[in-house]
Length: 599
Image (tube, rainbow, N blue to C red; front, side, top):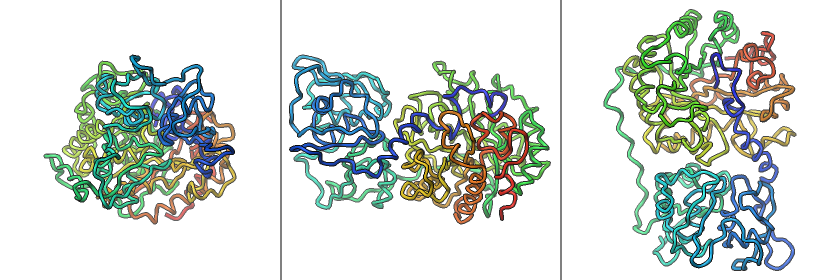
């Protein structure tokens, strides 16, 4: 979220939360329209197949799926640039082995003898898939291009294909288990990845661990799988059973007391208190019958120089919440310039170079406000590029380092404080460059050892223009946009809980530290769904969402996004559509409905 003085004046690419990546919103709209169509059908003519392009697919992955070369696929469809295909396009699949027709060589076509092969990375591709397509070992491909982390490549990057590779499309990559003459398990079970699958969802479906699947298939990054990929699920050459990953040992510094978590659902709302009439805002919270509030704290504004914390406004926020008898959550984000890495892109907010600097700040907060701040949320939507230092910098492992440092520092100062992991946002994008899918990212967090370092999992589901009971398989409204992917539906949080269960962490609570629906008659670009929701529907959806959450024993608290951003930012701002208060300061229908709702 974007708070404080600059909360209403952000460039479009830095607008927060459910103002999702625009590319995600546009592409998935198209994908949703074709989601119920078969992925391939037979067209007229001998051996002719037609493939309907799905969201996230690339021409290379389609060629690999059908066992044809990239250049023959491009020639069959008159494509001159392999990067420009769109969800919903229909492609003619040439018969396997059909040579490319003469003419202009397509992009990424393998060079002739003595020529150096190159490949330009398309959106959604992984190094694994590229290596598999060209029949090379992924490690050789990484070494030939000076790639230290094979999980991080970017669209437009030009890769040298090392010599000695097989025929493109052969799939004989050393990066994955061979399917040739190598011994295969007698009881082998395989899964062909479908559009929308995640490794953690597949593991849950088959009752095995995600780590076991990754290991059996040579996956270095469990979040990067693609539609059509064939994964070995059960059985092994040795005949052994997958072993669970040992739970990382907790930090040496143990808390002296356990935090007190809500015994029943806590009702909360996100507020903007800074430079506002705090008593008036908090009176409005109490008018809802809610007992929890969340305020985001931009670290960069409160510690502009190392060790020089500006306490005055922070003291006012904490004291005001306590004077009103409300439980306060502080979400701490955005490293100051002095704490960022020397080569950081300062046009984008991001984490510190040294997690100890962040830990020192949140530890100072916990020490000063011991017993006054109920919980600390460690960062916000760290699976988005503009929340984590820019494109190509996303890393769950790096986030876990920050989480561990913050957890230990907070617990040392206030053992009773609740540590919430940064709320993950549904993105529908999983390129590892601009975003990670929230379900995948959570799996990566567990793989990096996050489990001991948070008391509560933070989540940010959203409803877009879909009622809270809807799903990709069941849409009760007539709107055509923002359908077909779980990222558009409120009950996405249930899939996050599945990942918790899969990692033996089902005993913890999940808190929805932001959720809501927007209703706006003339919404800004990227938020067109808000025009589909009336103010009365927004009210109905929010009440129903709380009813759903009351029946979920693992949800400890839920915070509506938001109370008062319309008065703060004005009616044209995208955050105003979510607000319970109108730009004129009057309560909208959702406010009255929530106030009257049984708690």
